[in-house]
Image (tube, rainbow, N blue to C red; front, side, top):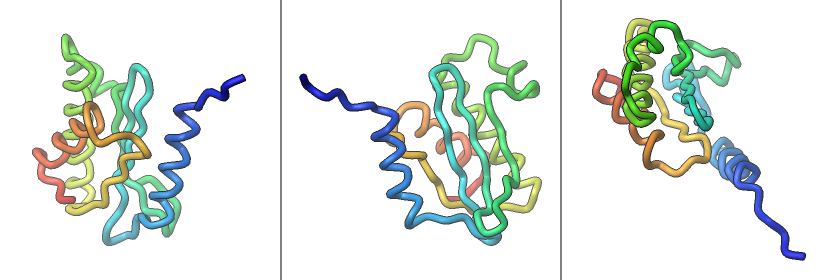
Length: 122
Protein backbone atom coordinates (compact mmCIF):
# COMPACT_ATOMS: atom_id res chain seq x y z
CA UNK A 1 0.00 0.00 0.00
CA UNK A 2 0.92 3.63 -0.14
CA UNK A 3 2.72 5.10 2.84
CA UNK A 4 1.19 8.25 4.26
CA UNK A 5 3.37 11.01 5.60
CA UNK A 6 2.90 11.99 9.21
CA UNK A 7 2.79 15.80 9.10
CA UNK A 8 4.01 16.25 12.67
CA UNK A 9 6.91 13.87 12.06
CA UNK A 10 7.94 15.94 9.03
CA UNK A 11 7.61 19.15 11.07
CA UNK A 12 9.81 17.73 13.83
CA UNK A 13 12.45 16.79 11.24
CA UNK A 14 12.42 20.37 9.90
CA UNK A 15 12.65 21.71 13.44
CA UNK A 16 15.65 19.51 14.30
CA UNK A 17 17.38 20.53 11.08
CA UNK A 18 16.99 24.20 11.97
CA UNK A 19 17.95 23.63 15.63
CA UNK A 20 21.36 22.35 14.53
CA UNK A 21 22.11 25.90 13.38
CA UNK A 22 20.08 28.06 15.81
CA UNK A 23 20.82 28.17 19.51
CA UNK A 24 19.86 30.64 22.21
CA UNK A 25 22.59 32.31 24.23
CA UNK A 26 22.33 34.60 27.28
CA UNK A 27 22.95 37.63 25.03
CA UNK A 28 20.66 36.43 22.20
CA UNK A 29 18.03 33.96 23.48
CA UNK A 30 15.72 31.94 21.26
CA UNK A 31 12.02 32.78 20.90
CA UNK A 32 10.39 29.45 20.11
CA UNK A 33 6.80 28.86 19.04
CA UNK A 34 4.63 25.77 19.45
CA UNK A 35 1.28 25.69 17.73
CA UNK A 36 -1.42 23.21 18.70
CA UNK A 37 -4.87 22.92 17.23
CA UNK A 38 -6.49 25.33 19.67
CA UNK A 39 -3.65 27.13 21.45
CA UNK A 40 -0.27 28.72 20.83
CA UNK A 41 2.69 28.68 23.19
CA UNK A 42 5.85 30.82 23.14
CA UNK A 43 9.03 30.71 25.19
CA UNK A 44 12.23 32.71 25.33
CA UNK A 45 14.94 30.13 26.00
CA UNK A 46 18.61 30.28 26.96
CA UNK A 47 19.98 27.03 25.52
CA UNK A 48 23.40 27.30 27.19
CA UNK A 49 21.80 27.00 30.64
CA UNK A 50 18.80 25.01 29.41
CA UNK A 51 16.21 27.25 31.01
CA UNK A 52 13.15 29.22 29.99
CA UNK A 53 13.51 32.93 30.69
CA UNK A 54 9.94 34.07 29.92
CA UNK A 55 6.89 32.44 28.38
CA UNK A 56 3.35 33.20 27.28
CA UNK A 57 0.47 31.20 25.87
CA UNK A 58 -3.23 31.41 25.25
CA UNK A 59 -3.72 29.42 28.45
CA UNK A 60 -2.22 32.13 30.71
CA UNK A 61 -4.94 33.62 32.92
CA UNK A 62 -3.86 37.19 32.10
CA UNK A 63 -4.09 36.56 28.37
CA UNK A 64 -7.15 34.33 28.52
CA UNK A 65 -9.27 37.16 29.92
CA UNK A 66 -8.30 39.39 26.96
CA UNK A 67 -9.13 36.85 24.25
CA UNK A 68 -12.86 37.53 24.18
CA UNK A 69 -14.09 37.26 20.60
CA UNK A 70 -10.63 37.09 18.98
CA UNK A 71 -9.93 34.43 16.38
CA UNK A 72 -6.81 32.25 16.52
CA UNK A 73 -4.69 34.74 14.56
CA UNK A 74 -5.72 37.59 16.84
CA UNK A 75 -4.94 35.49 19.88
CA UNK A 76 -1.53 34.66 18.42
CA UNK A 77 -0.73 38.34 17.97
CA UNK A 78 -1.78 38.98 21.57
CA UNK A 79 0.52 36.19 22.78
CA UNK A 80 3.39 37.67 20.73
CA UNK A 81 2.86 41.06 22.36
CA UNK A 82 2.68 39.50 25.82
CA UNK A 83 5.89 37.51 25.47
CA UNK A 84 7.68 40.58 24.10
CA UNK A 85 6.53 42.74 27.01
CA UNK A 86 7.66 40.10 29.49
CA UNK A 87 11.01 39.75 27.71
CA UNK A 88 11.57 43.50 27.72
CA UNK A 89 10.73 43.59 31.43
CA UNK A 90 13.35 40.87 31.97
CA UNK A 91 15.95 42.94 30.10
CA UNK A 92 15.87 41.00 26.82
CA UNK A 93 15.77 43.27 23.79
CA UNK A 94 16.85 41.00 20.94
CA UNK A 95 16.08 37.34 20.22
CA UNK A 96 16.47 34.69 17.53
CA UNK A 97 13.08 33.58 16.16
CA UNK A 98 12.53 29.81 16.04
CA UNK A 99 9.37 28.97 14.13
CA UNK A 100 9.47 25.36 15.32
CA UNK A 101 9.37 23.77 11.88
CA UNK A 102 6.09 25.47 11.01
CA UNK A 103 5.59 27.49 7.85
CA UNK A 104 6.09 31.22 8.51
CA UNK A 105 2.53 32.22 7.80
CA UNK A 106 -0.75 32.52 9.65
CA UNK A 107 -0.51 32.19 13.42
CA UNK A 108 3.29 31.87 13.52
CA UNK A 109 3.70 35.09 11.54
CA UNK A 110 1.19 36.82 13.81
CA UNK A 111 3.24 35.89 16.89
CA UNK A 112 6.29 37.45 15.23
CA UNK A 113 4.34 40.56 14.22
CA UNK A 114 2.98 41.01 17.74
CA UNK A 115 6.43 40.63 19.28
CA UNK A 116 7.89 43.17 16.87
CA UNK A 117 5.06 45.64 17.57
CA UNK A 118 5.77 45.41 21.29
CA UNK A 119 9.45 46.29 20.72
CA UNK A 120 11.32 43.00 20.48
CA UNK A 121 14.03 42.89 17.77
CA UNK A 122 14.82 39.89 15.56
